[in-house]
Length: 179
Image 1 (cartoon, rainbow, N blue to C red):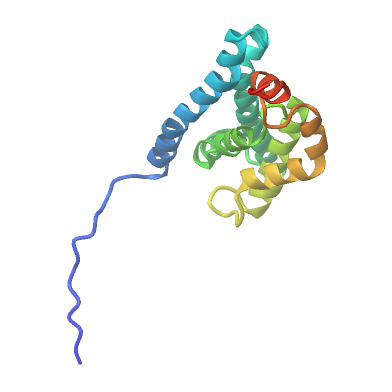
Image 2 (image 1 turned 90 degrees about the vertical axis):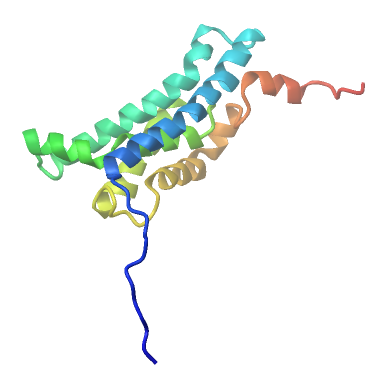
C-alpha cells in the first residue's frame, strides 16, 4: 500500500509572540474594566466605599503588574548578572507583566496588598525564573503564586472578606428577602 502525501492547505499566520501577548492584553482589558466596575464603581455608587475603594481594583492590578516586572528585573540583574542592553532585550522578550496581572486577577480583591506582592514574587521566582524563564516553565507561574498565597494565607484573606466586595457583603449578610 502506498500513501500519497500532498502539501496541505494549512493556515499560516504572521503572528509572533509579541503580537500574541499584545492580543492577550487587549483580551484581558474587558475583564479588568469589569472588575473595576463591579468592585469599584458599584460599591462607590451605593455608598459602601470611598474614593480609595473606587480605584482599589485598578491599583490592585497595577501593583501586581509592577511587582512582577520589578521582581523579574531584579532577578535577572542580581542572580543572572545580565546588564544594560542585554537586560533591556531580555525584559522585552520575557513578558514579565503577565504573571503579576494573572495573580492579581485570580486572587480575591480583599487580599491584603503585602500578600499580593508576596504571591507575585513567589510566582516569578519559584514559578517562572527557576525553571528558565518565559516558555520554559512546566507550571503556570501565576497559579503557583495563587496556590501558595491561598494555602498559606487563606484564613487572612477570608477574615478580610474573601471573594465578596463590600456591596455584596451587605447583601449576603442582611436578612432574607422574604422577611
